[in-house]
Length: 93
Image (tube, rainbow, N blue to C red; front, side, top):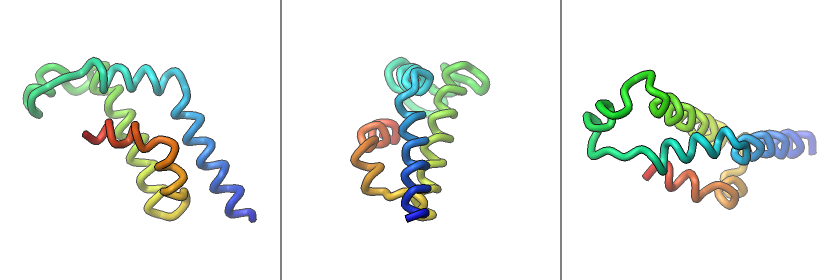
């Protein structure tokens, strides 16, 4: 029971971040406003340190952290997939 409670708290922490205004602003900056043909084109438009580069990096780190938690069995992949799979798929594409 204690483990399930901790897993639920961790999941809620992830979901709280996912519903924050800041997260959604990052999402708009990276997925809706950025476009490029290839890596070189991307880096010429959004170089290291640019606001877009930083916003995208923040999302990469967030999703990478979620992946590690899933891999370590700390979050149930099926539950998380039901909740935010659309964002994950769209981001990786």
